Image (cartoon, rainbow, N blue to C red; front, side):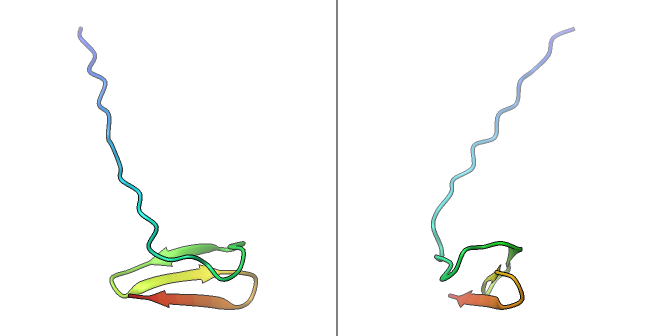
Amino acid sequence: MTRMLLRAWIAVKLLARSPVPVTCGFAMNDTGIDFGSGVPLWRSTW
């Protein structure tokens, strides 16, 4: 049986820079990015 190796190339582009260290993760949607840093959330829109 022949095995095929499938490779996916993903382009990464800087869309926004967090004003604080990201410690709780982030979420992205069609209007911007939310950064989590402890209790406060920071929003960067485009």
